[in-house]
Image 1 (tube, helix red, strand yellow):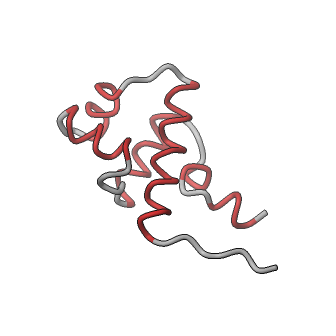
Image 2: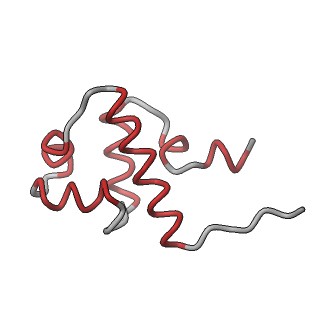
Length: 81
């Protein structure tokens, strides 16, 4: 059985969930993310909720800040495996 591809909205929400999970593991807050992205806390929360998707540059910044491979946050490890 072939697995259904995610829609862009589903993919954005899944990436946001992965970022939230990693932030939780590292006890990081939305205000910390806001500082990294140079945006307001409200904007950072929009990214974290998946209401607004992370762009590529933001995802690279977040991965570097969290010291995790960007592939993990972008769910590429799951797609490759």
